[in-house]
Image (cartoon, rainbow, N blue to C red; front, side):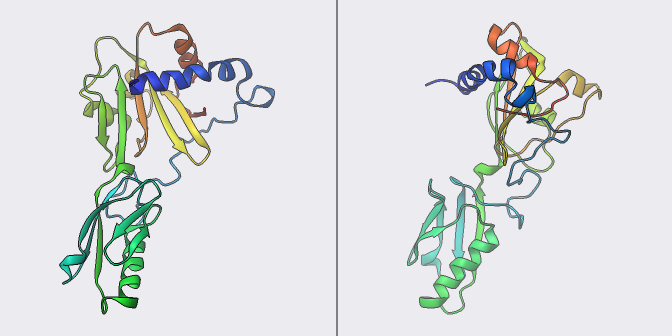
Length: 234
């Protein structure tokens, strides 16, 4: 199975011609740059897991409890269709909802047929939407939890810093936004010295730290992105 870095490089290499030769837009205008870093469509990065605005994601794990009816309590995973399966009710749509919305729906269904005035509590036990992936030339690759005001430098610190072969000027952030998948290049050395802003990191982001002396095509793609960290649509 290919590593995350290999997959991401394959995606990048497939877009090199478009980025470098046609600029992915009419008259050479890439159309994907913004002075403000685009956040995901459902930005939960700065919210607690129980925050009223957190939208449940597929593969999140939820604790569902009904007060004084322990037989109905369940720990469930949101499936690929965005559903959870509960006793008596069967499938209930969960993805895209807040925990409060889901509580009201479950409570309404139970109250209509099975339980008098049910008190339903839903909590997010494990949120896929609160995870970011770090790969490449860092000492500890893998998944991190995005909690509080996570920034790029803090995320890199979670990865225990750079390897000796890392190119600090080529830290790539891949992000899914309402406009599609975008990528930006950041200079970690400039951020460390205060010459550049430390950008926010959101759940769902993928951070890839390039190595010095990488493949030519990847290097051309990487170098075509502005060091200021502006995002370009892939």
